[in-house]
Length: 138
Image 1: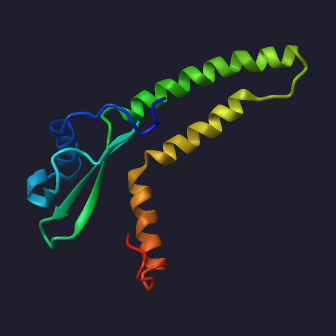
Image 2: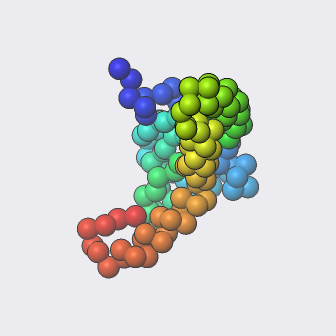
Image 3: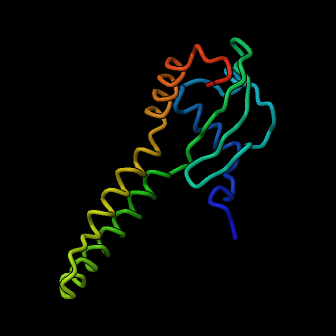
């Protein structure tokens, strides 16, 4: 059985081009990779271990899969369409189950998961809250 994070990786060239497009600078001008391959790959992205050239800090670079949001949007559209059919079936069976509502909640959670800007803000806030704890590293 495959683990959820055991998915094929996308190319480094594509990953680094994504970073360059988002930041507007060359990848090599900011980061120095500690290893060439990602340390993790999952359904929505992959992670590289690198050092910031500016100060030498070790960082994790989380890069979203290309077209991730488009793929998720299409999947949710299809799931929502089918859930409307199931809602009608459940109504015929006198069952009070709103499958579309479940899909809508799932969609909201998935979109939060792919919002890396919000994730970075949460990590920053966590760092501020636990800055005095020496065993916590963010």
